[in-house]
Amino acid sequence: MYFRKLLIYIKQGLKWTSPLLFLIFYWVFTHNDIEMGKKELYNNIPAIKVYNSELSLRDSLVIDGRAPTVIMGTGSFLINDNGRTIKNYYQSKLEKLGWYEDRYKVLKDRNGIHYADRFFFTKGEYTFVIMITPPLKEYDNHNINEVYLKIHRPRYNITIGKQNAIE
Image 1 (cartoon, rainbow, N blue to C red):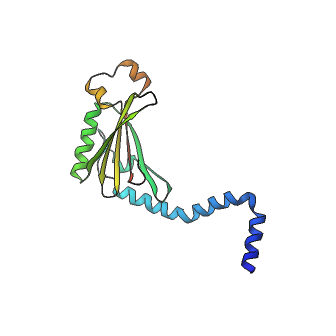
Image 2: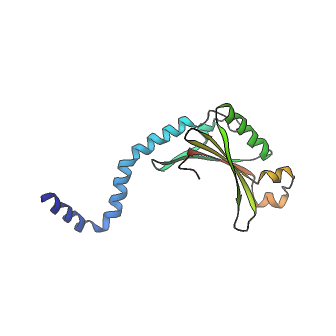
């Protein structure tokens, strides 16, 4: 009975702070799980170098998590070479470490214009994604002109996380 009265008192007296309290309690109870998940993800990032660099991929990706089940590492890199060369570099390095190419996705904008390619590699419960902008067909056709370069800077993004966290 005493516990029930206490709950009613808290509920009536702290209505305006309920969302804030929820967020504080959520952070307190999940913070440790998120930190453990970040360490686990860091240890599962392939031990390879960033293309055309001496930097480790592990140390180049930013690892962040919103919840213990949604922890990802991301990084964005400028392209100074052919996009296909970069894709082949990562593909060969990943395959040597036991990753396999799982799928490919064409990214289109709202006008239906193909603006990027996404390549998915899988190993166990982790997915490694390379997104290359502009698409590889543009490199193959030597279709990257000055106008395109002024609007879009050629780049590639890498995302890694558990399969349930990545689309």
